[in-house]
Image (cartoon, rainbow, N blue to C red):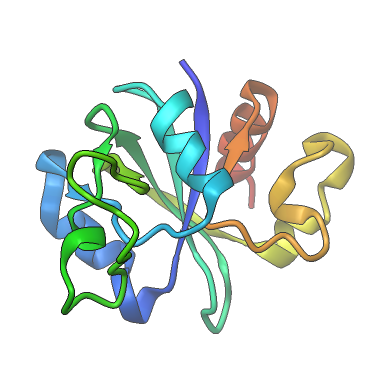
Length: 156
């Protein structure tokens, strides 16, 4: 099993939206960064753990747990000329963008803000979320980082 952190802006797709989809899950579409795409396409497996992170929020932070609910498949928005994520170079025979479905697991007992996570850099090590300038919407999380963040949830 692997672990991931998925960032989403709450005004676009927030935890309440994810919760409403329940265990059925929802397509994580619109990713247009090759590294994030490759994580979904080549590395993710059904059942992998996901931290759901609110970015570009008043208080950015981890708000819930989800899981990868499908194998990767072509993102249909790349083929839709009316979509903001349309890619004229993509074809059904040669898709360029992939996605996975993400399913709700549970809300955290308390939100873990980015500022709080930054106070635990020693325990979190090289956690990509804490690296200055990291703008990826999906980042890998090590097993140790996953366990550390779940322990932080229980503190306070």
